[in-house]
Image 1: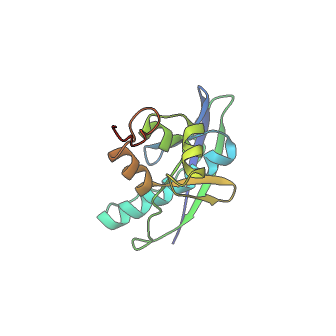
Image 2: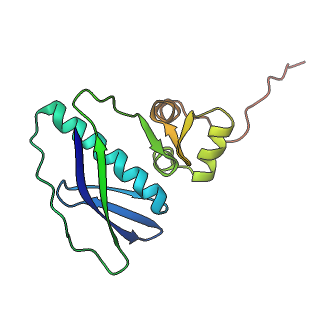
Length: 150
């Protein structure tokens, strides 16, 4: 089934914040393209979880107030209770969880430490690879070389 809800996009520091007033959920992105992807991903996951738990979704409403520098977006998703949930996250979310920079996350993806894929032009990091890295962090500095004692 298709669901359409209004999202309000407004600047929040160096990011753009997206909120769905009817649902009380919020996400953020780096630019308008990232925001559109994150909003759709959040909306789909929220609706699938609500359907699985038997929660009645509110009727969508439109024309919510937004600031002078904000946007209103209509976000559409096509999902059901049995829609598989995508277990990915943005580079920014992975960086926040691992307490590293976004550039470091991109380097970890390049070096094969984290798995990723692209959704359009937006790189998405596999959540399980982030969780594994979080639970088994590398120590600081370069790895020691085995040195034989003479």
